[in-house]
Image 1 (cartoon, rainbow, N blue to C red):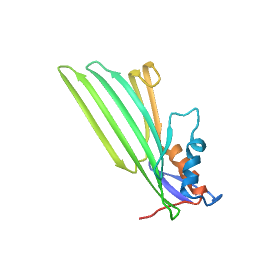
Image 2: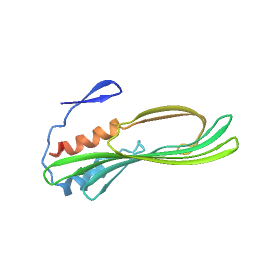
Image 3: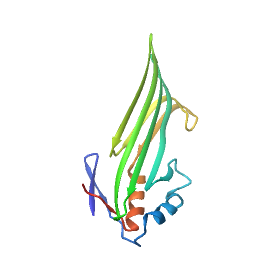
Image 4: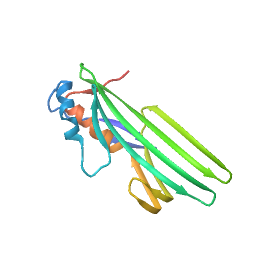
Amino acid sequence: MIYAKKLGKFKLYKEAKVKAMMPINEVLANAVNDLTKEDEPWIISTEGNSIIARINWKNTTNISFVEINNEMQNFEYCINLFDDYKYTEGTESTTDTASIELGSTSANHSAFYGLELRDFHSIEFGVNHNTDEKGIIKTNFTTDEIRDRIRQYVEERGYKRKVF
């Protein structure tokens, strides 16, 4: 068992029991069908020897007394498989904003590459372009579920996390 630190608390993460040792091409051939759930916004794909989960989790226009702000945030989780039955993982997140304030405008782009865990919650006033919700917008986002599900999927097929 592995303990993963989450927001100052420890969460138990169970390593999956190996069901069968599968070569990379078999793992990837079934990954999209096995990992995709109809009721969630994640897009699962395979590229090369990787399983990738992508989400555009925030696409809003926020309005305040002095500012109008457009914000788009994307997140990508990736597991790379190797022939020695090991895997590595990484994330990429990007944020794009454009603002109009009293007398000025601004635009910003930021990106992060590495391994990032997110648990984000916000309440804002404006428009959610993903759901067409208007007024008070609640945004919730966590990476735990998709990360743990993809880890379990590859570990059940005989892959272990590569330690550097």
